[in-house]
Amino acid sequence: MIPYFADLPPEIYDGILAHVPRDERQQTSLSLTRAIPRSPVPLHHLFECIRLKSAESVVQLYRRLRGRLEEPRWVQEFSLETWNVDADVVVNLVALFSRLSMIALFVGPNFAPEHMEEMLEKPREALSYISLRFRPYVQRATYYQFLKGAYFDTTLVALSRWPTANHPTLSIVQDPLDAEIARTHHFAQPLVFFRLDPINTLACSPYLRSLTNLRLRVPSRQVAPFLYSSPRSIPGLRVLDLSTCDIRLTDVEALAGRFQRLMHLIVDGCHITWGDAQENEWANVGKTCALATVKAAKEREKKLKTWLAARAVCTSPNPELATVPEEVVAPARRARPGRRGLAAATISLRDEPTRTTTPVIPANTVVPKVRIVPSTPTLCSLSTTTSTLHKDKHDAIRAQFERGWDEGLAQLTAIRGRLYQSWRNGVRMVRIAGDQGMEEGLEGLEDVDGEGAFYGRDGSRNIWPVPVLCLAGPTADSVLHVDGCGHAVASYMWPDDI
Image (cartoon, rainbow, N blue to C red; front, side, top):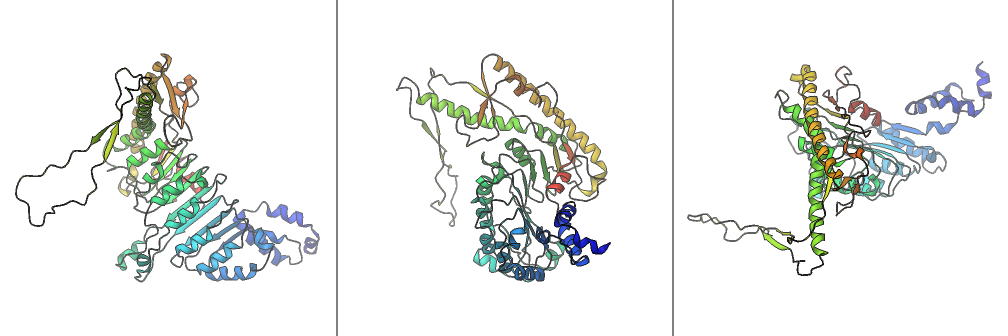
């Protein structure tokens, strides 16, 4: 029977290999070519999905593909899974691949920011999955990075210059410092990111306009404000993983209020509560999640009222009423009585008190009344970690969370009910659209055109389901996880088990 395998057409082998998982197809194709050397196994399956786990394999592959025209075009997925490698060879190797749709890199201590800048200098239109995992830690003290200012902030800036992509998935992870290294090596380890401003630049860039899945882990750094501070930040975000970052409950509230399509939020290793054992801690978390859109609507309504008032003054038919805004100056610090010390400065290098302007509204000026209806809560799951001491109390914690969620929904329903009556009485109602624009005037707002905006997801008077609360953290123990939790969704988006 074996001699007849060589007579099979290549299409048969294509059909067989199409049923093999992509990450196993390379090894399967290689095994076929060795077991049946005369068979017409299509060679492009050897290069479709490449995973390199040693520095030697990187050099060997580069020598194999350098100068070739057809074989590098077969590569669609490239994964580098080794920390010690010649970064220059990696840059040259990746430059050969013109049709990449997926790239995953381990960025170790041999990589410099210039390597990543060169690799990301030219946009790749077909690339929809990027995973960068940083581990710059060293065994011997070196201060080259600090003296040169060599940080990977420029990597984020380089990505922000790319054009809009089709629903990309992005992962930027800095591994936490190993406890053993921290215990035995008492010197400052290199930083991955010095400033966090580039996170906001990237979040508001055209490249992430259609981003749906984001994993951003920078241990113990406050990255959340750089995501939710701008109304143009990632309007299509659905899955967000901020594990190991410095995330507080106020950040969870702001994230749930900013991102209108956010369904799964993962904050493993973050302290969103002060203590798991306190009675109302998790009830407060549930209530905060339910009312996140209410706070966002109130803040947006304040900006809208200020804009409407200023516009009403400027368009007033009586020019005498359009007065110049008066300036409100912060009061100067009063000198304390007593004798000054010799070391007390006689001058101050501080900036002058900030001046804020408030428009003067004449009594007979009519300001249009516009109210903003809070958006529907979209959060389907909240995944985090509790202390080992309270793992046996997960059910009680979920009960507290559900109770707080129900209390928040009751307030949300009451607020929407009052707004509904105002809408029936002729008050103009708007709601925040998916693309929030720059929040200037009515930009990013749309008029309410029916009763469905005041009730449930399907337009009826139903209650929004409570989000799934998973407290298992990153553990692989399936018993601790809850059905439908964000960990399961993330493992499908990022199948690298980190």
